[in-house]
Amino acid sequence: MLFSRHSFLNAAAVFALLLAGDTAIRGVHAHGGHGGGEQVPEGEFRVTPVITIEGHGGMETNLDGKPEHYAIDGQFGYVFEWGLPNNGVFAIEGSIGPSLVYGEAEHFYGVVHAHGHDDHDDHPGHGHGDHDDHDDHDDHAGHGHEDHGDHDDHGDHAGHGHEGHDDHDDHDDHAGHGHEGHDDHDDHGDHADHGHDDHHGHAHGSGAPFKRTDVRGYLAARYQPNEKLAFQVAWMPYYVTGPGEEFGEGLKNEVGVNITYAFGDGDVNFALGDGLEDVIDGVFISVENRTGWESDSTYIGNYTDVWPGFGFNVDLLNITLSGGPRFYVPGSYSGLSSRTDWGAELELEYPITDTIALFAHWEPVYSSEDWGSEGGKGWNHHIGTGVTFSF
Image 1 (cartoon, rainbow, N blue to C red):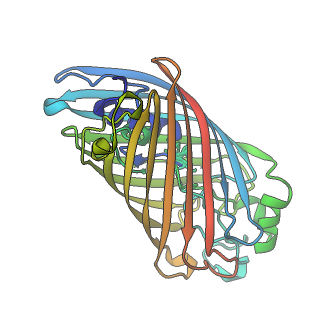
Image 2 (spheres, rainbow, N blue to C red):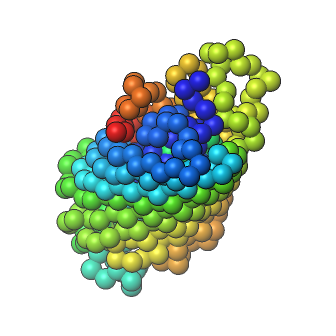
Image 3 (tube, rainbow, N blue to C red):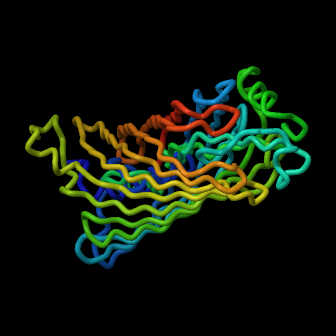
């Protein structure tokens, strides 16, 4: 069978490269076989070059003005894998590439948008609103990771583990990705002299016009001691190259830590005769924490997702569903207290050949409380789709 537990976890790594950001790491997700394919035998080493192209967007329908942002990412990277005993693997994955920004850049989930610079001593000279879809990963991915995204982010619970999710983490935001739920997008520069209303109007009222080309990166280490358990740590840097973001030019940073446990062997294919009695083989639980900083080093906050999920195949199509509470702790800059949001993610992957795979992801998140004068209670969404090539 093309999609085994190994490809389920290993594919997640490459998928994270895809979503790298928004989406980007949601954890060992259930994505089947691109970029690595077969399990690396114990004692052997494999290097897989990966190229991912993803389009993703974030829609913050829970905020005043309903700001939106979109991006087209090109990620170029490698997955390095070492085979371990008990069908385990240790992998290091990294990618980097341009991100064509429309509307505003990705930002960390839950960023508080502009209140006017008088309200924020930490940000003299500009308003303080920042946007956050991811986150969603966004991206994933992004990607992703999402924002994986992006890709975050594909990019989206290094994002939730599951057997087919390892590649996703390595690759998002729904690499993503990034993925995402995650859109870690932020707009600061263009709004240096604008308040909250101008910020939303610029991102949404003008139809999310092209802004500039930023640079997105992804670096992750994944340790899978056996077929059921996987640990991952990921860093998702994002460099804002020019004006147009509320926190200014510079390097945004996001760090993710994910633990995923699969209850079965991850080998569920309803097109090959599996039935309800086999569902447990695709069930997993993922715990992921993400922490974000803006381009001016402002600490945005962190969140922890505790999301159970289910991954399965219908012939070659791999489908992963996950969701649960998101425990969000905003940074002190926001003046907000902790809250519990609720999110979910749908991820699809379809291999065209042994080296080409199509993917898509959607991460809706419901915020339980307002984020201040701009609103916040309600739904925001991160979506992404793309293609990955492994060599």
